[in-house]
Length: 476
Ligand SMILES: C[S@@+](CC[C@H](N)C(=O)[O-])C[C@H]1O[C@@H](n2cnc3c(N)ncnc32)[C@H](O)[C@@H]1O
Image 1: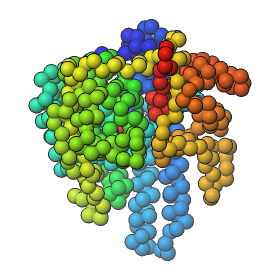
Image 2: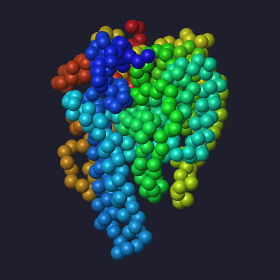
Image 3: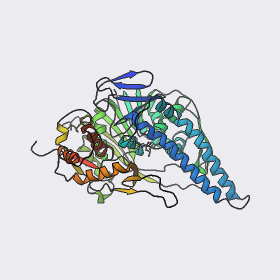
Image 4: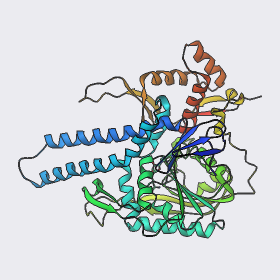
């Protein structure tokens, strides 16, 4: 069912905490039973998770300091709120440090070299702190969310005759995954948020989670575990743009509030097509996703979806526009805002009749020795709004050179030399040079990258950030 992302080889379960590829030897950690399948290198990506908790700590500490500095004269209602904020942050930090501890333990027992781009894909996964309201929404009986869970489960049972393997992608707090798992033999929860999956697994296995909900004025929340055991669930930390499932193995894929945030909806849809069995079903409940070209058109409208998905090998079985209020906290806090989202709810089937669509090129070509990939021509994707800049907070002293890659408003920290390297790389991508030509100019310029490192960089830019397209050279 699962395979090595890099070479598609079979995995051997190497106790107690690693999956190892029998062909290329790549290792994938398993941390407290959550399996980490990330490219380019799962082990060296782990320290980035630990930086998340350090960042949360620094952020809480800065907020707390400025609240103390602003403290109002003597006892006042505002002073009470400041104290509530500060004790909430302190309690959550203790809670979150325990969530991240298994990752710290794993890294300590398996030291590895973290660097370059290997650590950065995690930026699209949510941090432990960011996940907390999702646990409230998924598990504390919020009516809007209960309705969506029921709607998706009913749709899944009605459209999926084959109750084999299901996967919830971007599973988040895994409330939906738990409900879906009741209807399938085996279910997979996939998310880049390793702390999120660690919390979800702990909860589903019977331990309550207690934290303070800052979105509801720092009220204490205890999320109770489900009372009945779940069917077989496997938790997988992975980028949904590169899934570790063998082709044609899933009966059902569910995406909820994900399709609109992935880096490239078309590549993502092709990946779902790949992992589904013939006639497998894809159920989506997400905000409308953006038109890539021309980007000026904004988001797709519902009526445009059948055409879009037919070309990708799916037929639409059902589709509708719904409205959903995320994080409706009205029952615990009368002073929170509620905003309604428009949502595209659709059910697609991988079509036997449309099977002639060409197979997308496999990810393994970036990680295994092969000549063909070098003939591909990179081209910068229009409208991805990419830029580099140096961040220097006005009220802070500059510590080292911090460069950021800004991709459509999302910031990815990159070391200074990587920023320079990317800048010269983009300058060489003129839509005509092949990867061989670009690499050879790079070498002439004295850039110290091996062929393998260069291809990993191309993989990240193409697949994880969707900043470049790769085209076949005409006449080859
Ligand atoms: C908006 S949240 C939705 C969570 C969940 N579906 C829900 O509504 O409760 C998006 C989730 O997708 C995950 N995510 C975002 N980009 C991802 C990617 N490229 N691969 C895997 N997970 C991703 C985030 O970590 C987060 O848990």
